[in-house]
Length: 340
Image 1 (cartoon, rainbow, N blue to C red):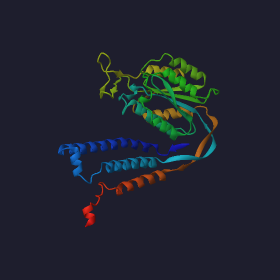
Image 2: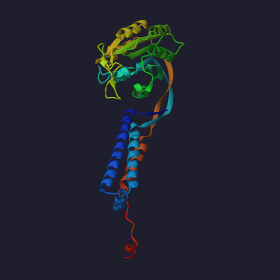
Image 3: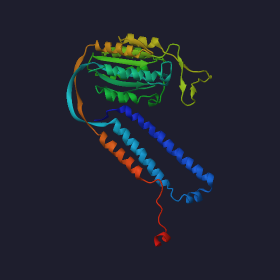
Image 4: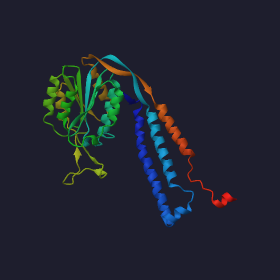
């Protein structure tokens, strides 16, 4: 099994796009400057030492050096020894709403980011519990099956965004069904489901499927995120707020009644998440700890081999090569010079 020990460093790879934009900008500026002087073909002949190929080569070396350097800092690891470990805990499946209404900013910085922060903090509180992740909007998908590898779970969580599900909506009923299917059907207890949503779209099947999940042994807890008063939805395409067909600003409101009804049907608790992240996490962790726990064995990697040194070595080598490559071509000696 491969993993990154410090997966948060991988966000630095986004800077490669800025590096490419900078390269294109400099290239455009150079071409524009040449055109201002005169005919590009004649002007480039005047700059006898200039080499466009060397300029591109030096950029590629820096680009690759940065890429390998980031991979090295993230520390790619491979599991070297696997052991079967017996644990005592609860199976926890988190269903996270990733619809575009979760981009509303009535909870800072936005509903989805705050929900992801809550899940990450909850994982820090869990010990031997297995955790799984379901994402939903217009459809629901199992993003990550039950596991005790919390570092991998956080890596999955970091990739969650509204763009991963093209069909919009809030299919809470389907999310509950997918979450229930992620549990072991042979068991009738030791199961906790956590549904995080603004509950904006009413789903008539949600209560029915929650009751069915409870009959299968799953207790459903709900977390409402957002404000009852609502908040306008940002529109990334226009940079303003989203409008309906009549030109009115779309307001997304928290539907607490729906989420409270689901929690009641699932014999769980409902909590409102605004700026009280730690309080909600502590209450959820206490609720899970109070449940009857089970023993289960799982094969997990206990030792990992690190390969950061190879990537950092390649990065350093590329930077050294770039440093010694001249920015201009060396002039070839003319016949007259040779004769002299």
